[in-house]
Length: 211
Ligand SMILES: N[C@@H](CCC(=O)N[C@@H](CS)C(=O)NCC(=O)O)C(=O)O
Image 1 (cartoon, rainbow, N blue to C red):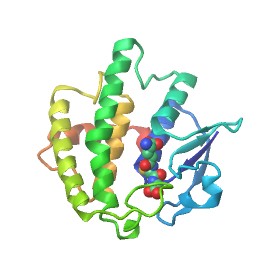
Image 2: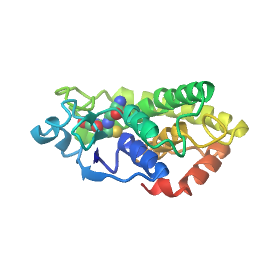
Image 3: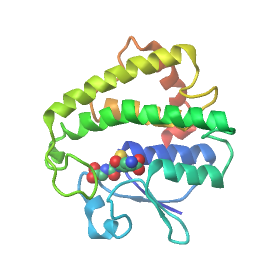
């Protein structure tokens, strides 16, 4: 397998951490998004959408969505389970995973994309042509992130993990959102979110966090 990846981007990191938790290795091709390598003819021949992560299987099959890639890996390498083991836990984890994307990742993306000078005419990611950034969306993204932090902090005051009583894909998504928001969107977790900080320290100590 070959993963088209970018070390600084949150979605490819979700896949890298997922693979590390499963102990799965694959070839890695770095694609520089800021330089626009994801929009080069060479990469578009692999994934016409121009987005990362993209996983190419040994038979040439291309998988181009983070959660679809994780689903494939979960079914192929079931241990340790990261997406649930029975109908209820699978549904609960999927719901929380979606909350982390909608409530957290979208805000982080808006906050970064619409403030980063290099993306002035790349307001949307991927192969969609020129799209103006909207500076007001950066502020709205930061406001979303602060709501997300408060809500996740409250959840983690009652629960060790983001979805169920074990580490799952929902923790991976939340972790990548928090780190990306702090580094790229300059919106770190506020000091008063002590439960979120406790959880972040625990997840950071897992070896997969280095992936
Ligand atoms: N829903 C897609 C989103 C992928 C996505 O937005 N990837 C970003 C990196 S985190 C990207 O490739 N951006 C390219 C660009 O900004 O042009 C997934 O999760 O796979």
